[in-house]
Length: 367
Image (cartoon, rainbow, N blue to C red; front, top):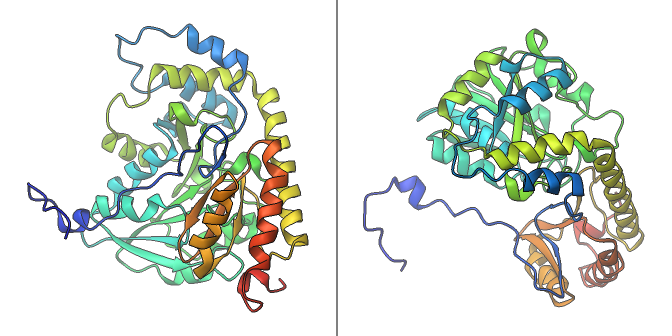
């Protein structure tokens, strides 16, 4: 029996598992468990951080320089941009802003592991809609799950951890099937890695065209600033005002804002790195299929192996080869795209794992 809590805690919080990040890797292993950018920060970004030393002063609470820069970039007003300590913090703020006890939040599952916890913390009820067999959103089922109690619906494109995108045509049709006053949160944490030409782009149409949609992006993945925790949202100013009202004040550090601005200055170089990662991803995905895997389309900086009941054993096999991957017991393995030196080992171990799966295993069936 677990140790009793010494104070009164909400029962649903006491029962909620703590968020578990990807396991760290030793010096001789490759950490492929957290969807991090394997490249070190650019020298320009490091130099900018060295010049930001006034940690005895509070940061600019609204990250106004970064908001102005992003507003200009996307052709919106400053009030239509919101900065947070990672896009997940803004997601939390939006859930708190629109929902409470008795309300519902709809999201796909399996998807980003933080979704269930954020909904529970906000006091709302979780409505998890299973993915389609190919790891894609079942948007028809998600729309059908909306009730009078629904206050927000989350779309994750590319979906983490499975990888496929929602297309722009699918998303537009989805919006037409929803109430106009229902908040639609489009989580695009991996948008920069997408190469599918028909993928949804949450920043394509803004403002009065889709006032109930908020697009979330981050500097953690493509821009390689995961350790500084900074992301942003673009949407209607009144919706973002509601999110800002629930935010923990001063949670975005001055160092994070400076690094994000410096990264935007060096965007051509960073985009080159993103192209390398996307090419590496496609090469790994092709190698997995050649080895006999049936895997979903990969559009993030990771690939998904639907190992099902064999997930824990498969993860141990990768671990034994010095590859730390992310296991979702009962569902599958997510393997981040890491250093080039890891690729051959990933493909070799994956080939051995698929050979050990039962012949009728879904991961071995032809697509």
